[in-house]
Image 1: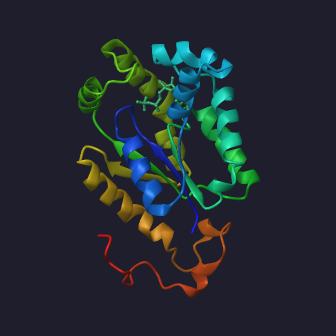
Image 2: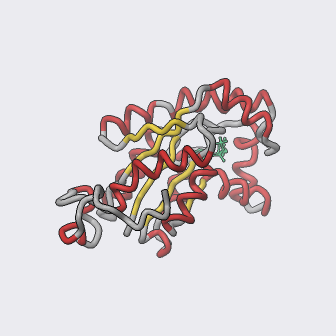
Image 3: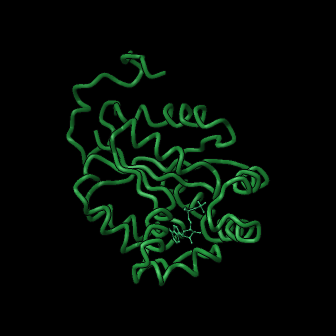
Amino acid sequence: MGMDLILLGPPGSGKGTQAAILSQKYRIPAISTGDVLRAQVEAGTPLGQRVKAYLDRGELVPDSLVVDLIQHRLSDPDTQQGFILDGFPRTVPQAQALDSMLAALDRPLDAVLYLQVDPQAVRERLGQRHRGDDLQGVIDHRLDVFLQQTAPLISYYESHGKLELIDGAQPPEAVAASIDEVIRPLAVPSFGDASFGHKPNVSQVLPDENTKENGSNA
Ligand code: ADP
C-alpha cells in the first residue's frame, strides 16, 4: 500500500530517526536531502563543491538545486509504493514545486507530519550531535533559517488539510507510536477515501481502521 509522507520540523526534531523507523516499517524509501547533499560533499563531486559552503554556514542551498534532486529521486521505481521526505520541502517555493510534481504524477500527499519540539530542546539535542554543521553558531543560524523560511510551511500544509501535529519532545519510540496512530488510518483507508484515488482501489473491500488488526505492532 503506497504512502507519500513528509516529515517537517526544526533541525534536531528527530526527522531522520523517525524517517528510518517509518522506512523499515512500511518498506518505503526515506529520502533526506541533507544526507544526499552531505554525500555529494564527501565524494567531492561538482555538486558537492557547489553546496559545501551553504552547508557549512547553515544556509539553505538554492531551491532549484534540491527541487531537481527530488524530481530525479521520485522518478526512481522504488518510490512507487510511497516515500518519506526528510528535509524537503524547506521553503514555500519548494513545497509548490513538489505539489506540481506530485500533481503530474497524480499522487497527492497523504500527510505532512510536523514534529513539534521547542527551540531550547533542539539546541540541546544538536549541541550533543557531532556533525560538521552542528557548531553552536551554525546551529543558531539553522534555527533562524528554519523559523524564517521553513516554518511558513506549517500554515501552508494546514491550509491544504495535510498537516498532522506530532509531539516530538517525547522519546523516539513514543514519537514513533504517535506517528503510527496518525498514519495507520491512512495505511488502511476507510470507505471512499478520496485521497487514495491514485492507488489501487482496494479500500472498497476493506473494513475501516477500527476493526482489529493483527495487533502485534502496538
Ligand atoms: P537538519 O534537519 O539538522 O538541519 P539536514 O540534514 O536536514 O539537517 O540539513 C542539513 C543542511 O542541508 C541544511 O542546513 C541545508 O544547508 C541543506 N539542505 C537540506 N535540505 C535542504 C532543502 N530542502 N533546501 C535547501 N537546503 C537544504
